[in-house]
Picture 1 (spheres, rainbow, N blue to C red):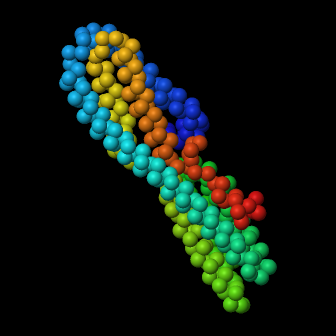
Picture 2 (picture 1 turned 60 degrees about the vertical axis):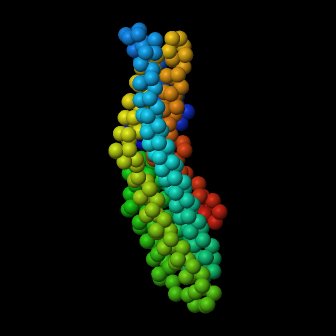
Length: 261
């Protein structure tokens, strides 16, 4: 469900729906509770409610902070993996310049096919949450085939050949890491804690009575807005390849790889 939302709606739209919807529901719930139990406005239970609200708020805040930091770190790691894979691919293209023209052309053709398959075939699969190891396997193997069929003739070619093979191994390693990150998502238990905690904390604010309705609604709305925005971050950051804040394939079109486009 989150993947569909991220891929079909802008972050701004999701923010309006998530934060605005949370605030509206909280305000409506507070008004209903106040009308049903008018005695709450006197604040006779504020001491008990304040202690409970503070305790639950502290625990929930720690959980949300942990989840958001974890997801942000995951997003940064994914960006690093993508940049590293693209960099290694670009270095192979540069190393191939030292090879004879037929070999260089073979490396360029195979590497170009791989880069295009990553961006045009595998990336949409990752955005949909269905990465396929086989989508680029043959293209990557073609690069290996070209290098394995070539035997360096000079010391200079041998040096660049070893560098190219090393970078190709790194590409294979980063590719596997990238596909693994595309399958990652927040564990179900943490999802329950993140979203279920909001269902516990927000209704508690209804019980904290204030004489003036406007002040109470402002209090409830502020807490709901903070929680709603935090949950928005959880949804947006949970999938590193989906949505507007996702990791992009731009590194595969820059530098030495730009000529393949």
